[in-house]
Image (cartoon, rainbow, N blue to C red; front, side):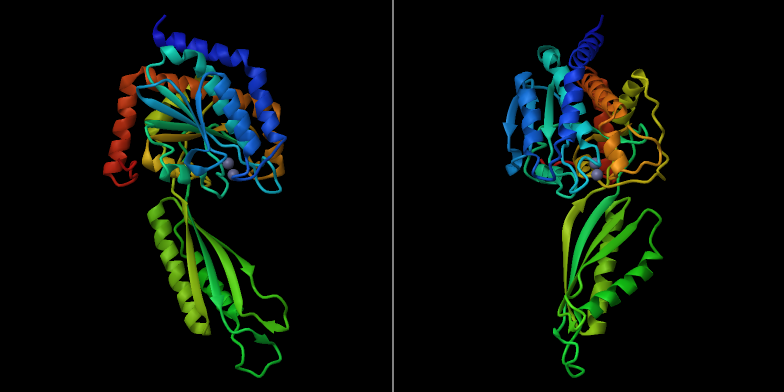
Length: 400
Ligand SMILES: [Zn+2]
Ligand SMILES: [Zn+2]
């Protein structure tokens, strides 16, 4: 038997031996939801398990108390497996990140006994706060991904997909200041900040009609006065701007800013326009995705080909994919039509189908890590594809 087949067999045997433990981990995280940056118990569970299996664990990586980096091996090409474990406020694990955590940890446990035989390193990266906090964006900025050649993760969904992209996502906070006054005060003594905001929204709706098909523009009024008998001196909205590529999302945000400025002029209010660094669009590495798909097929999962027209969300793994070759694969846990961030999806994340996805995720991640480390030609093709994407300006690459 060649080395690769022997390693694969050993990894699958390790998962079979620890299947109950991997499923129990998924269920335990599901039953104990912790929101972004507060995932202390989940991070502690994962890092303790990996440490006991022989990983060198750094806790609190990048100044994030609930991030960790667990390393196996000392030299050679390095494959990272990302674990997310944050829950949603009020909804608990409605995005099923307990399955991401269990699959990643399961792959880590499967690869641990192979440490001396693997020609490279495995890094299990605990990445907090995917839901709005951008843990991976912070880790990228603070060197959490240094030394990593390839990054992978799985996410639960309603289909098995290996190369679906994600939308670039930008956020803005728009604040109008006017002149607060009692509603009965003589005309001209107050300036309604809410008028500024409503004028802004009216023009924004005109822009929405002209958006490119992949773009999404949504907003809420987060502050619009306190009582109807008082002219509000301050009003505020929060906006989300998303598109298939971050350049177009950036152009849209500039357009939104000009609309906001126009509304301020029209209503004699003053404007404060704050933007937040958002998530970049995912550029999946197709070569890596194909290797992953081949492993899913071996496990009996049918992979749905992507058309580029499917509904997409946003993820901080998009930022990772712009810096190094990466994939964000999806594993089916619920029927088509069940949407993420719902009670039904939360239930699926702690169901037999959810458990099966945690185990298959662990298997496919472990097998693909073995493939990347034992097949220099595969790694060379993954790198060549990334270099071509970089030359085409679609990804930026890690700063040296
Ligand atoms: Zn989510
Ligand atoms: Zn998610």
